[in-house]
Image 1: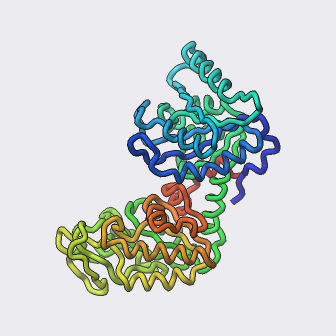
Image 2: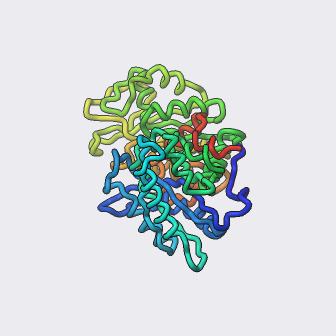
Length: 410
């Protein structure tokens, strides 16, 4: 896939660059709980600053309904200041698409904002500065991709850089909308994710092995469908396999399943390329009465019991395929890893994946719970690409053309 990158911009000195980042990070008591996404945006910001550009960052946080102080990006600005070693002013950017563009109130609002922007970005020593706009979802037109909001954002800058892969699947004003009004390029993080993921969808080195688990069948089945012609083997766990067992007539008790996808689970998981668990760990949600069950014979769990992990035989089976892979993709835990003793299957797969990725294979992981496992085990750095966008990664792998990716494509 050919994309427009930062290296193609001839002169950035003095240029105003609007950068769409993804700072949708967890907050706890008014402070940022996890810095990963912020840290991943730093290479692009530092690149632009080194070239003499004036950087205007735009992001969302949460799902506010109008202005919500609890979802302010002020805590993010404080983290950025520490990481960049400079002040990062937080500016309120408001646009009211329902008002006419020439209205006095609209003009006055614009004038005040531009005055503030100029005052904080004009440095007597010529040092390039960074400004962070307040939560873009405080503006009603963001998620609806209102062209007035997109045009207003575009008026702030000379160039648009999309660096938030996690929002690349959103057809929003600050993602695909702005791209219609400004020269648009992929940031370093965005380019890294697109190029990495393309290695699995275009010409992957073989054997190509995918591991798909977790929940949300509606997002996992399209990935499974799209990867089946491309991958050599797909190892499955989680809700995908639970639903398959239920569809085959097993008594799965309180296991996570999705009855809407009975036919699809039978069709896709019966494919010869799909490697299903041969044993599972079942028990109560609190970990009591945990035991191994082989799946070669039908069983019936009690109503308060469920399948919570893959078993030891399955780990050995999966290991055989992971150890021989040249390309690896993983999204979704094998079970309820948050509760002991149901973590062993997921942890084993994670360590196998990291070891192979660190060696001969190109490995990609993504998704909230997958990344959480990697962090717990402290093996993030052993993976070639840890995607910042779970939803975007799944849609990319399912073959969808993402609005953000389209915006930076040649």
